[in-house]
Image (tube, rainbow, N blue to C red; front, side):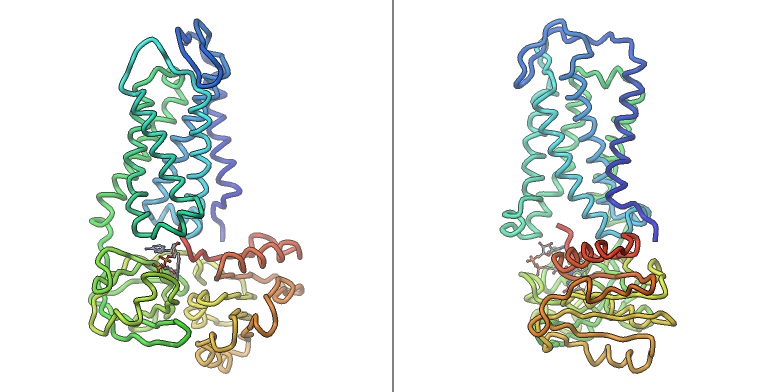
Length: 432
Ligand SMILES: Cc1cc2nc3c(=O)[nH]c(=O)nc-3n(C[C@H](O)[C@H](O)[C@H](O)COP(=O)(O)OP(=O)(O)OC[C@H]3O[C@@H](n4cnc5c(N)ncnc54)[C@H](O)[C@@H]3O)c2cc1C
C-alpha cells in the first residue's frame, strides 16, 4: 500500500518551499529596501537592502506557515482523494496535528525575526498581531496534553473550527503589509495560491461539507451489553446504506443521545451483512452513556466510510494482527475476508474476561485452518512484545490497532528485528 507518510511529506514541503525561494532570490533585482523598520529583538534597520537576514528569514517563516496551514485545511476537508494520498483519515489527522505544531513554531520564529515597517500604519499590522495570538492559542489548546485532558472534544472542536478565521486574518495581513514576497514572482504565486487553497478548503469544510456529504440515516435495531463496558450497537439503513470495506470506520451521531456530537467508530460487521454493527468501549463522557441512552428504534446519522485499514488496501498473504482491547473491532470485520491468507491474531487484554468476542473468533478458527489466534492476557503473561509476534520465516504484514503505547512498542520492536516499515500498518483510534 503506497501512500504519503509523514517522513516523506514534511521533507517534500520543505524542499518545494525553499526551492521556490532560492530560485526567486537568485533572480531578484534587489530593489527592496528597509526604509525604516524595527525587529523585535535585533534593533532598527534603516536604509538596509533586501538581503538582510531578518527580512529573508522572517518571510520564509511566514510563507511556510501559510502553506503548512493551507495543507492542513485541505486535510480537514476529509476529501477521499486527500485521504488516499495520506493512507487514511486517521493518518491524515496525525500529520495535521503535527503540522499545526510545526506551523506555530515557525509563526513564533516569524514574529521574532521579521522587520516591522515603521514608515506607515496599515490595518495589516494589528491584524497580523491578533492572528498570531489567536493561532497560538488555538494550537496550544489542540496540542498541550493538559488541554487534551481538561477540554472535552466537542468544546475543543468548536474552538478549533475558528482557526479558519484566524488564518484569513493572517493572509489579509500578508496582503496588506510591505513584504519581499510580493516582489518575488514564483514565491508570490505559490504563497498566495496556497492561501487561496487553504481558505477555500476551510470554507468548504465549515459551510459546504454537510450539503455535499449528507449523512445517511440508520435506525438502531439492537443494543447489547457485552460486559466489561463494551456495548454492541446494530443499525439498519433507511436508504441504500453505506458502501464500505471491512475494517473501515465512519462517524456516528445518535441525536437521542446528543444532537451535536459525532464520534468515529469502526464498523465491526462485514459489508455483506444486512445491518451494520459498531462495538464501543466506555472510555469517556459520550461512550459511557451509549449503553443506557441508545434504544432500539432510535435514529442514527452516519457519515463515511473512511480509513484504509482494510483488506482492500492491505493485501499481503501472510498477516499478523495485533489488537489491543477495543482495537479488536476492525479485525472482527476482517475475519470475514480471510480467504487463503495465513493470519494469526493476537488479542491483548488485561484479563481473559475482557475478551468478549472469543466465541465469534473461535468460529472462524474452526472454519479456517489458516487462521489462528491467541488471547494475550497481560495479567497472566505481561505485556506483549514484538518478539512474541515476529514471524521471521515469512514476509508478513503486521496490522496493529489499539492503544498508542502498545502500537509504538510493537512497531519499534519489529523495526529493530528487521521488519520493513512498509509492512507495518497501524490504525489510529484518536484524532486529537
Ligand atoms: C478511526 C477511529 C476508529 C475508532 N473505532 C472505535 C471503535 O470501534 N470502538 C470504540 O470503542 N472506539 C473507537 N474509537 C475511539 C472513539 O471514537 C472514542 O473512544 C470516543 O469518541 C470517545 O468519546 P468520549 O466522549 O466517550 O470520550 P472522551 O474522553 O470525551 O474522549 C476521549 C478521546 O476520544 C476522542 N474523541 C472524543 N470525541 C470525539 C469525536 N467526536 N470525534 C473524534 N474523536 C473524538 C478524542 O481523541 C478524545 O481525546 C475510534 C476512534 C477512531 C479515531
